[in-house]
Image (cartoon, rainbow, N blue to C red; front, side, top):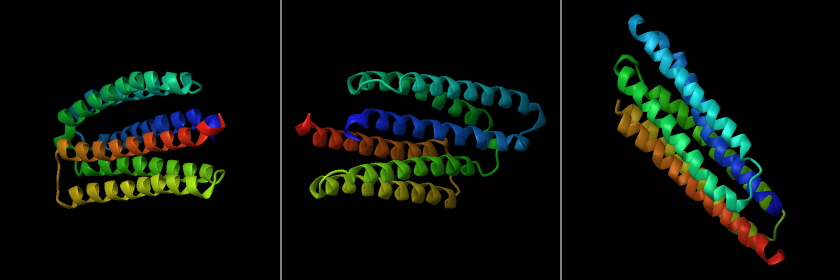
Length: 203
């Protein structure tokens, strides 16, 4: 994995964002019939905008799939801007139609499930890649991977707690998702750094 670490980590980071977008879109589309008939056309237009943002993000991610480690640090910022744009559109949807959607926490649970799945898949991949290294290096990487899985479980529990409490606040749910995403990104960076440190002596 050292020679391909950049490609692997770029894939994991972008896939996690795309999986969240897909979960959000699927959930919103599935709840359209809960809206008042006169509200549906506007809601469908917003969902279409979200779909276009998702496709633009995906195309950009594919375009940057083979960039170098140094280039990725710059390009990630560009992708983050696209992600922030998607989030703003998603927020607009909930500000406009959230009160009409019953149990809107279901949408956030769907997104959390996608987020957790991506996190656990990345943890499994880095642990598998770590088997190529010595026991001392594997221990460091296993610690990072296990932390990722623990953070995923905590994120799931946090969303469930909000749901059981009957929370309907965009701020509450999105804040919980954002905290989990930030933990994922920190672990992602820690794993990248670990693989770079391991690869450096043989460079």
